[in-house]
Image (tube, rainbow, N blue to C red; front, side):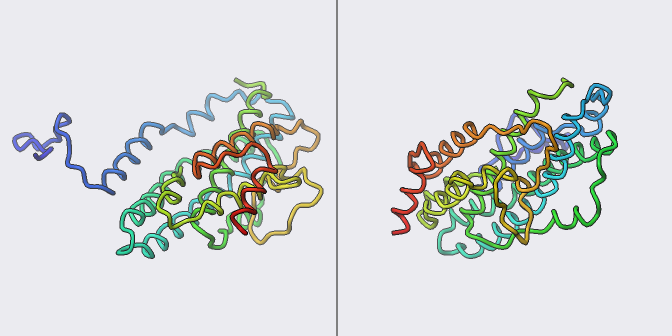
Length: 274
């Protein structure tokens, strides 16, 4: 049945459209995206900059810079999703559709993250914080090299977990008031070993979870935002216990492998490595 009213030439919202597989997923992505849209300009207009203290300024400056790295993540996801999709077309068409949906979602993720980046960096400028130089923007924009698709999704998801924990912790201190990885494992074409490898990278002693507070931070070609936070005397909004719990829960959600400590992550990963 057509959803177009022939007489008025308008869409009839009471008519359920046909189900078209991938296009149905893409419509749900658009619907969700529009539901969560918000105005960066209105948000900034509601901030009382006079009430923000020095610690608040430090948090805003740090996370404005950190958000510069999300565009490379979304761009990498778009490129890798498409190349992986093409690889499975004709061999596993359901998996190819899942991968294409991941790539399509990257455009909405990119737009949402643009709001975060723009709000925080512009607020930083309103507060007369240290300017973010052009060379820093260019360096933070460098796209990661290609990697296994499941490793990429899990790494991006953990990055979002870390950001969520930092932001909620930061929000409790200030004065002023994506990705579906499970389908890849279920397809049998991607090993849960990749998930455990990335989880171990973060939760191991001295791992990525501890960011710039580590004794030694690796020298990388690309920028991981958690390596470059500079709190300059402000209290660090870390909550490693919550971050670990969220990572362990996400490992189980994606792989059905229950882990409750960094040691268990390492053990299960090494079992798979053989």
